[in-house]
Length: 339
Image (cartoon, rainbow, N blue to C red; front, side, top):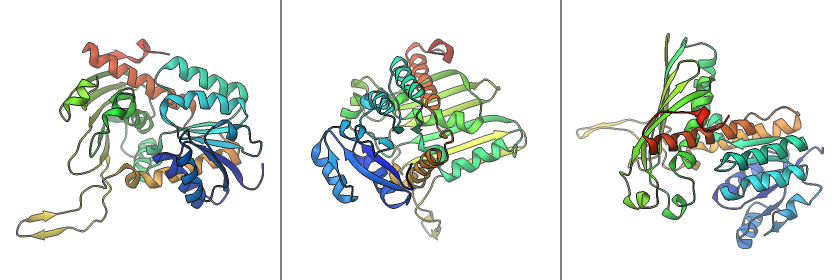
């Protein structure tokens, strides 16, 4: 390996451009050699913006470049598993946005390719790298609140996604709650054994017409006895609501929303504070930076990536279990879905 890690980016949409900016300007040891997108104009715009020397419409041009050592996959979900397998076969280390795929057979095929070719795979569960959430997790692991008893995760978007996205996303449990399923495992350090999900369409009837829900509460039962709850909604009129709490035998830990400032304004009409940050990129920018730094470090130091392919698989199992629970109105053990 050279002094710089040579990287290619596959997918130049919104999240692809976020990763391009980070790799281009915030991690000095990375050199982006190429970007691809099925929309040639998107690839070229990204290349121009971030001084990337080559832009392609076909991702295989990146995989065929022997100088590229790692790829960052930011394409649509339905391409993730295919591109992971192809990148592994080309000998490239891989960072891939979540989810790997929406079904376990496809995921397992991709993970087998990674294993067979001896490359590293990190899945983009960026919230693990949020400084506040990581601090809570580290304190839980250090025993600062004794034995955990309850965990509560609140995740509510400022507005629902386009219906065109809802129709292909795999549903709320696999496109939105999947982050919270990963966080549930991360915070407690134990696997979830059983899920019960209830929900409804309370924000936009067209979401229901598309076969999905927009509001849900999910109950988790862990192998170590902890009980968890996740509540989700596609719309929070006050901004991007992202909070966690872990309650234990010796106390509790909580992480509140990030806000633009901490100034409190008091007057005759009340006490006023800033609304939460409104957009996920604002809220989690530091997490996006730190997850890519961790990926690069794992390659340079030849250590396991901090979010593995298995870490990418299990939240999909949890999402499928939640969907089954919602449809059948009963608790579902993860063992019913997949090992």
